[in-house]
Length: 294
Image (tube, rainbow, N blue to C red; front, side, top):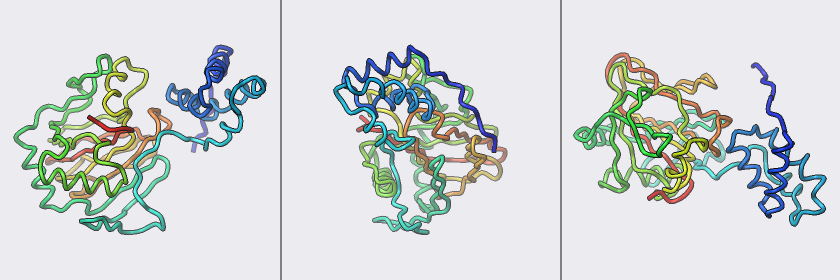
């Protein structure tokens, strides 16, 4: 594996900013999170904090270095997480047994088998079909949405709890990932016909874009994604994570989970939907937020 050399420089301006935040009684872990969200490498950010705050610790109103040392490497926002203590092969939920087929720690990825029945998949597609339209993505300048050439599927959104089937699936997701229903967006259904794809992207909202502030007013950042496969194409349509060389086949009833504790590429969650070459792929996607989404 190739080892990349860090090239970010700790400038006098950065040290002045760190010191100003500490003098304003900002907690050191909050300063660290702000730097990570702005694109600073974790190791560089920590070194800059130590270099800046150690000489000034006596004059600050907080014990800065003990706070910094208490923050584990890579610490970020709380994220959804299935209960995989003891490495179970099966998770027994309130209404269904779900298989644990694959787990990764970095990026945090878990593949579940038999998350939905064939009948549930078919019923969800039937509910969505009359409302399908060309899929859109977030417009970075305004925070609204727009048609984007990177995403060539058809899709629609259900409101949370819109129908008994939707309620049942949402409750199952909440139990599986230990994340409240009201901290998630409504289910999105996507159909990929031959040639359709979704080029590699991140699911979090980019803090550097001017429209992000407006998006974050409804529940904060996205912190997790669950992709549920409803219909299998004859060829193509895998979910790929190009940075880690992972591809997941779209098997009907399976569900793919991944989380990201900060809006930064260091989470390793760059992913995309490979082009469908024969047949149709249908998926249901659930995005989870930091706070209550409304």
